Image (cartoon, rainbow, N blue to C red):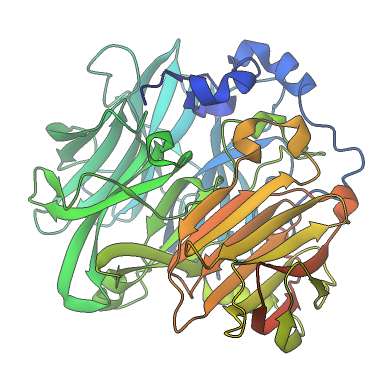
Length: 537
């Protein structure tokens, strides 16, 4: 299908790629920054929705947040930045807000680290923060160097900022911008930088409309073009990254992964984190196959970044990465109920591996283990039989955020076609997580949640993923928070994430079977203790 894509200037330099044929109803609400007042007027009312702010996900205290920036580890703490707009909805532009953590679950607010509109070249958009261990840039060994996109008068350039106090405050490099847009205008942004130890150089990936550009540098200030990875079927490829991983944890079997934020409508997706496995020869990336894969097949996992833990041995760093994404979608991001905050939050940090699943190399993800510390006492049931068309009561959540684990199967006497779990139900409004045994498909549908009727077709459209049962059983691990649901299947094989709103903070939970008998082999429901960001010091 040939589609036309539109783009608008979002708060603090954010992005939007939407498809006209599928999103015509929402395009009028997604225009330029000058239309902020009308966009806010179209926001879904939060009346009757109860409390809104998520309890175990990272949110800003007020204003707007979007793209997370790849964190680094220094002096016993993780340092993460995200794009932030305190002035939202009345002012545009983003800057880098700084948070720290020791466990990637509990976060501390450190304030704005790089301010917008005070550095000469516009607002501060996405980029990279790296530790310059070898003083290649000349700001001192161990300086934190940020290369980020700035946008002024619709022209995007790359600028450098450096910190000598561990990433809390930054100075502007006198030679900014260090990279000008080679085309003079258009998309040229989201630099992602890593140290190429084999070649003793820095490697940068940049989003250039329908191309990912590869560049190298010896000093982080002067960059040389290497090559480009071009596609015309994924919209603007944003926030790209390249990394190497071992397959099934075997250090003798490694491959490269090229990943990017992408528009997946041509592949039955919407926006998400697309990737390819393949070979990197030092100049070009060669994918194993043309079609991309997706780390999360839900509607709301975008602008994600991944990283390794330098505390781990080199072999473990090849085996395990961590990921965090923006839980939202540009089709409706500025229309969600928000209360005092902007309605946006980041995903839980995930542990990522590269596995061979049914003969295909694929990235897998599951919640980071440290989230387990938030779990309270579990309510548990076993061997619950559900008849066709029957709705069964199951253990009810006792908190706004909770973790649901369920192992579901068909009863061999009269196998059910489908099992559905209704989340956040009040009897009228709900979201559904389920599994279709006939098509071996897991799904999440929110067309009956508390705000679906006031949003777009993209919001109401369900998301699916093919999941093969293991010995006839499908395992679900579901993290439910006030405004989102993250579903992980068969341990870490597949994921579906979505924004979901319940009416009046409704949190009811039921189970249903269709066209036969189903069995919930086991189910546990555990409350998750709130983990709001706090001001340190």
